[in-house]
Length: 557
Image (cartoon, rainbow, N blue to C red; front, top):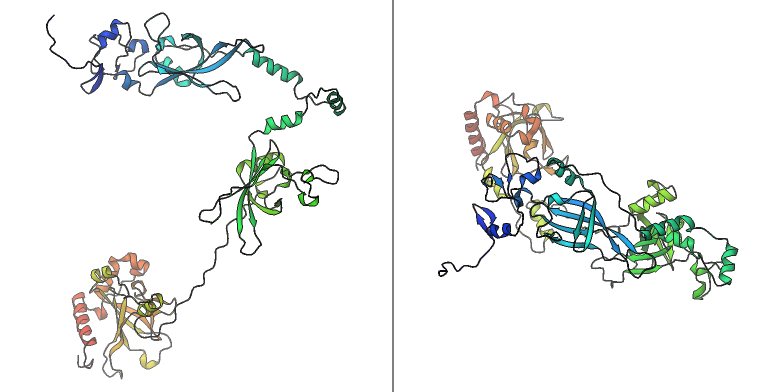
């Protein structure tokens, strides 16, 4: 035997062609351990057992087959069954039946057994056998798919599990591989359960005559006492009525406090919980009333605690479900709680027991009224400067410069709309022929009015309105671009103008921006003052602008 030429640490799993493989397959096969080989991805095998390639070295194990951990990833077979367990040193039972669920994972042929939990059984239940490959008794082999079937008995670690049923996926999986599972079997009942069930059917819940109860109690045999209370407890255990309530504190600096009232149907007890409000400044005392029976007439008796809630006959009268209604008031030791709402289970219970409808459960408003904050309105504009400047001295102690839309100023600089207008309304005859040019500046929503020169008209043309922003007297808002179109009427300095025409550039601009004017952009039949072209309109526009801003006389310009 020569010296070693490899001193690396041995391992089982390795990567080959991007797939995890078992490098120690010869050792596992020598022990008789079956391995699940890849499935043929081109077609679905008819028999699951034929799809398992037991001989790994055979030519069938090629890269055209997927490994089992890929083909059967997250595919689990589930069987239901039971096993019998002996009960020593017990006179009530000798053995019991315990149900269980058997899970078989196809990717690695591992199993795990779980036992469903049964309330009040007194038995520790849950995962019975953790997931691993479970060996068969008396051999080195492990349980596989072929060992699982309805009616099969599996000896596992000293217990014999009998399979009685399976889920739909398991049955369909076996059917696709040519195996038909049997019909479900019934799980036998243990003697203790049968005895308790038959005894309850024969003699349980029989009410006794009050005289017989008294005589048996006098003789020391108080049997079947409290049957009605026991029945009520078992029938209503876990059923709680929930009401949303609030208490209005009428004292000085009082407030409205929200609460949640719980009524336990099993014991007829009442619990009142306070709803915690963040940052309320109150200590965390969640319970206004701990779980107990709530008397109705606690203030009509003496100070003896043993007689609180007792009537004239000495019988204590407690609050019952019939006393709880949405919109009503319940008194909790001096505090009158207004019931404002109930949850869905409470509505269903009252509808079933008392025949109430949704109209009997109105959702009352539990929110506090919003406090009204007195606001001082800004004073009217004095006329000096712009309204933004005057409003800045009202809003801030140190007035700030009004903000402007610089993006609009840059993008729409030089974009002006020109319209031809005339006076509208009750106009004297001498003013009928006067024509005005209205120029609207899109950069800052201002406009100016220029009167055209007409010979022998008797009116001196020129500047009629300085460039400025003007408010619409109808809605008290600034005039905007959508207010200027052919047929529109604008008011400036108590003069009403009607737009009768527009130049070619304005008409084209309105057509390209229909999202601003909408249907108003359709009236483009007249383009240009007196038929002038777009180039002439631009030249006329520049000439009138120069004359408008000149310091000399308009006629000289």
